[in-house]
Length: 447
Image (cartoon, rainbow, N blue to C red; front, side, top):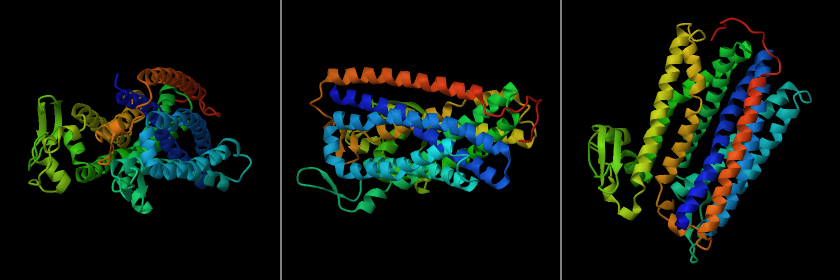
């Protein structure tokens, strides 16, 4: 098999296995921050108990994030040596800043959350929860600075030896796609973590265990979910506008749009045929793509045929992952609106089928986050640094195919083992529940 393809598959596996844990961390730290704030303000033990329980899960997720993330820098250095040499001036400062200003902050104060509850004041403990939350989000920021620069490079020049040298550090950091991509990614993490919290709370209620804690978990996580899931379509729209302005070939692939046209339709369904250059079984809303991007039904949108074939991203994968992500997001928003309606009718806790669905659909936001990442990265192809460096020119051509395949198989086995350990331990924490168990009670409790 081709060396570049094998290297891409290996890196995709490594990032995909790792990506789920930072996104969960974002949501869990936010929820812990909310419960610690409520405990500081109201002093109710249920908020303290709930926070302690979630901190145990956060510690597990944090360890898994470290374990799965260590291999990424090694993979970049071995399989993408040309990329490392050319963009070291960009990635070096960003990754160093992530370690110094974010990872250390998060890990140090997570230690206080785990072991310092009785050793520091209540207010200092709240500050520690705040700094863990800030550290998690700063970590995401620096990683997204590096990745966003690959999507929309800025503030650089090409040196005579072909390396990329930063001449405007602020322009490189605050590149055109950073702001909206950061917000989009953070919200995806909040949704994933909050869904996990809500699912655990719903599970406890269905089992008649830890009723007060379960209602606290569900109530506050559903509030976060309702706000973020309803805001996500707007954030996603703003990112689509940014993509239209900076990566028009990616937008065309997302929409399965082959010919440049005014009154361009917004695709709802289709099956792109890259060989023939058309999208079969196409269903779209006439004019809506032009209107959503430029607020003008007659505005032209560039199609794939406006770009040389070698400069187009893989259309089928880009189209399907993008539409699956959007579809899952819309489904989650509808599900949460239904939950809000049930709460308004005072039927939330007695509607057991809804609570069961809340548990069952818990993986969906993580699926959406993963395939959203796939859509963003595949849609950037054939560039590893958009418009500057092609992916095929970034791989380590001296690494034999068999070595990449061997490491790929070994990594898959190791990740499978780690995930088995993670799920086993997570299941044990959930089954053990909060340290102080509520007495079983009948249906009840205000939503």
